[in-house]
Amino acid sequence: MKEKLKKLFAYYTPYKFLFYSDMFFAVIGAVITLVIPLVIRYITNEVVYFEAEYARRSVLIFGAVLVGLVIIEIFCNFYIAYYGHIMGAKMEADMRRDIFGHYQKLTFAFYDNQKVGHLLSRITSDLFDISELLHHGPEDLVISIIKITGSFIILLMVNVRLALVAFAFIPVMALFAFYYNGKMKIAFKRNREKIADINSQIEDSLAGIRVVKSFANEKEELKKFKAGNDNFVAAKKISYKYMGIYNSGLGAMTTLVTVGVLVFGVLMMLDGTVELSDLITFILYITNFTDPVKKLVTFTEQFQNGYSGFERFLEILSIAPDIADKPDAVPVEHVKGDIEFRNVSFRYEDQTEAVLHGINLKVNAGEYIALVGPSGVGKTTLCSLIPRFYEVSEGAIYIDGTDIRDMKLNDLRNHIGIVQQDVYLFAGTIMDNIRYGRPEATDEEVIRAAKSANAHEFIMSFPEGYHTDIGQRGVKLSGGQKQRLSIARVFLKNPPILIFDEATSALDNESEKVVQKSLENLAKDRTTFVIAHRLTTIRNAGKILVLTENGIAEQGSHKELMAKNGIYESLYNMNFETS
Image 1 (cartoon, rainbow, N blue to C red):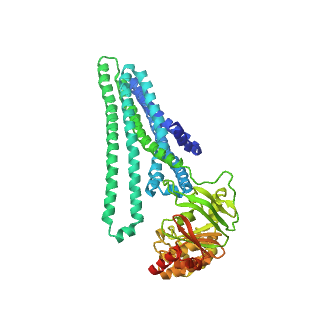
Image 2 (spheres, rainbow, N blue to C red):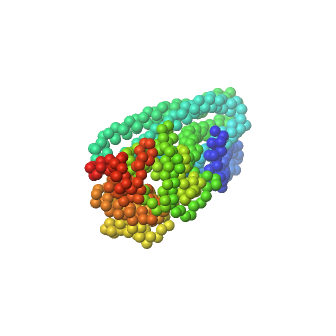
Image 3 (cartoon, rainbow, N blue to C red):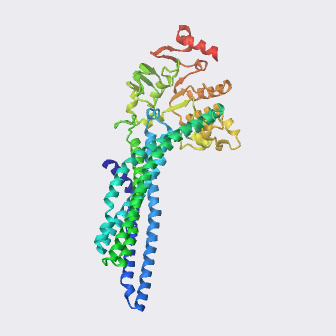
């Protein structure tokens, strides 16, 4: 816990001035609340017995002093509320930057096992709770300690016996708070897990809203949501039960302090051992004493929320990317495109069986390679190993004679362009989405890339042309249009190595012809890997590799493989019959 708190406090470092000024005004405000009852006690104890004229003047002076103290207190409260929250918001932004940056570093293997809703909850609700703790926590603690300690010392000076009555409840309150704090911590952690489940379910349902509606399954989605929502409410009930016991118990004890002081104070006043002015002072200070106790209650709730959120935050930051640059990784400015697989095997983390085993393959720069074979034999996986989306389990992959693990990861990926079957377009304009291939590109370069991808004509058919908003994931475009934008993006990137992952398999025949032409334009003079679903599209490939569960079973040109009457020939005939 010590190390975790150290990391938590490190977020205060850039905002030392805000933090110390916030603490300064918190202290001033707390001291003022201690001074005001002392001034009132002096007026009721001393000033009322002065001569009438002098007493009147003194009351006005002390009244002005009290008003001045109240004005200072108002400013202090405003400062800690406004600037304290600004500090909290800035620290929250820093944490959001850190966790989002870390998300960017994590690999496909991490995302294969995660739900987006869970990851979102860590960057939204968790961080808000942490920032509330970082802002309110220290000032609430300081104010509470000053008020409780100050009140205790002053009350001891006024009347020892009555002060001991007032503070007799503290050990009981501390034990009570300690026990239920533990219960609340567990309950709050469970709440976070449940709300993350709900976020994930909502994200999944909304992302697939077209599928939901096409199957008229809105009721099914509501059922799934209700199940998650009910689980969340059940978890909340437990935490609210403990919170209810905690709040009501401490609230009752603070009221009992006032009752105890009043009863004992009146009895002592009847005995002549306490003055009425002292009893009034005690009553004023009891309020001053119970307020920080309530503040501590709020602090403990915030601490449970914020600290459990920070633990979840650290959980993510502690996950080291399983694919990263070596300390001695070399920068790569130019790549020819010679690629070699040497005895490459690969298995997923949670599987014992290898997806690829003993792959040996040499591809010359500018060569056009097609990968075919049944589903599940590792065609996409093989291509995903080249940009190091996954790390090889055994063997090595070389580009221009250099092991890709010895290259800077960014440089490696900057030299590889990928066109996938499931095109992902970001919310925004057509121009923004093409420019994603090279963010610093000019408008002219973007337009040139679109023309090369046979996309310019359909783009200009829109009233706003390149500035047309395409909606979330490009919902306003057809499949062929989306695919051509993704090709334009790669044209703009201009990499020497290309991977086409079943880029035309989801398109109709007419769209496929246009996209296929764009792909062929893009592939000129580049090392190209094509994962083919429709074998008719790869007849002109320089080399076709037939993958099976046992590795590369056949390789050669279309003509050579057809002449063998082997696996490729039967796959091709089957494909031709179904297409």
